[in-house]
Image (cartoon, rainbow, N blue to C red; front, side):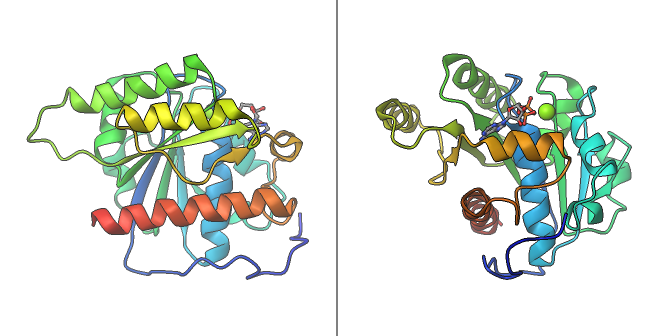
Length: 226
Ligand SMILES: Nc1ncnc2c1ncn2[C@@H]1O[C@H](COP(=O)(O)OP(=O)(O)O)[C@@H](O)[C@H]1O
Ligand SMILES: [Mg+2]
């Protein structure tokens, strides 16, 4: 799928010093882990970064998405088969994205603790917020001497005009959760691009802008922690 938008229409500054792991996690299925992982991969590629992806979900949705893609950006994402980060260390890329199925296993712990950033997509639903909470608890249980990556919670599939959204954001912040300023709207294009194995980048202007804004937030957070 060729980009309908002009390249560079949405700028992200490339910083060649970063070579980082971003893990997408929430024990709740359907929260948007694969959707955000794939679209952030596409925007990172468009910015000029090299990106590899580990699909640690047994359903292998992201892997299938990448291997079956006709998207110019996504076809440049390198799939890493090993779910072992040690092996992945030898892969020379700027970013390693890890899509998970969210079960709190030993493998998941390995991913979480080796991440520069954990992104937890969250629908405006009780189950998603509880699922997000499990990731926070999981990290906290590791003890104080273990370095913990920041967690960025992203409200996904939202209606920005809904008053429930602002209440949920307030509540999460009160609970000490770091909530992304960028919320991802509920848009048919996210489901369409999933079915067609492409990204929203260049397919839908508003969705592209949201993904750019979210990626910038994520990169700034990684930089500030470095
Ligand atoms: N912002 C959104 N707007 C509309 N549909 C979405 C959005 N985010 C995800 N979806 C759809 O919701 C479903 C579940 O998303 P997915 O990313 O597969 O979740 P997970 O990987 O957490 O299980 C998919 O069909 C996807 O296309
Ligand atoms: Mg998934």
